[in-house]
Image (cartoon, rainbow, N blue to C red; front, side):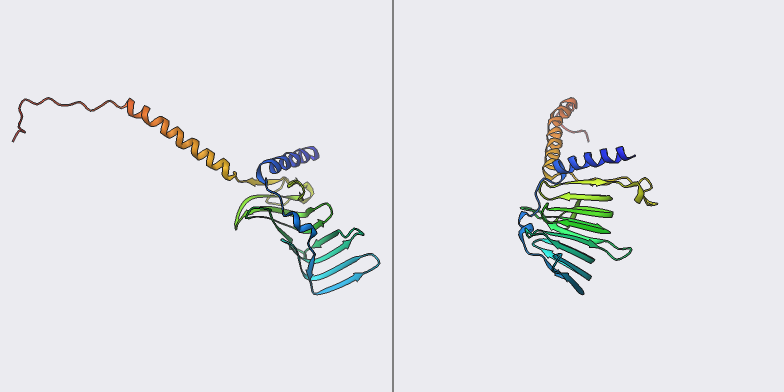
Amino acid sequence: MKTTIASCSLALALLAGLAAFPAAAERADRSKPMNVEADALRYDDLQQTSVFTGKVVVTKGTIVIRGAKMTVHQDPEGYQFGVVTADPGKQAYFRQKREGVDEYIEGEGETIEYDGKADRVKFIGKAEMRRLRGATVNDETSGSVITYDNTNDQFTVDGGVATATPSNPGGRVRATLAPRAAASAAAGSASAAAAAASAPRAAASTPPARLRSATSLQEPR
């Protein structure tokens, strides 16, 4: 089963990286300051660690993260590493705009790990991730663990048999990938061209109506 899950994860990552998510996430976000709102804060200067609790809301450029608790560590280079957890029975939330297009990546998990140095996000526990074009969901996937790499705009998904549910007893990866706009337009053009090409043949195959001969120039009364 482990081999099957790994193969599925790799195949889905390649498919998503090459076809579903061609645009990159906002590159400037990693250099923006992190702003956090919460009910309480405990700061450890020696460890350079901040622990926020109670309705935590994080913004960093176009990034928005929400959860019940967030632990943030900052390394000597100034990069930030955050772990967000949700209240029991709920999920933490992440959202980020994609560069140059009106699209967003958003995801949920019982725990979300944000690595500012690697520019990577990991959704852990009943993980879900979606690509939205405007307000419309185009692609979505779910699994036990989803890792999204902003640097190359690829993600991997682990099905996680241990987290199987009654609605998904095999703990398998689930994904819905919408066709790209260019592919849809090309398919529509091909259908129109095929219809136009078949029209003359259809007309040619229909025998012309015969003219009836008349015995006089006047219509019968």
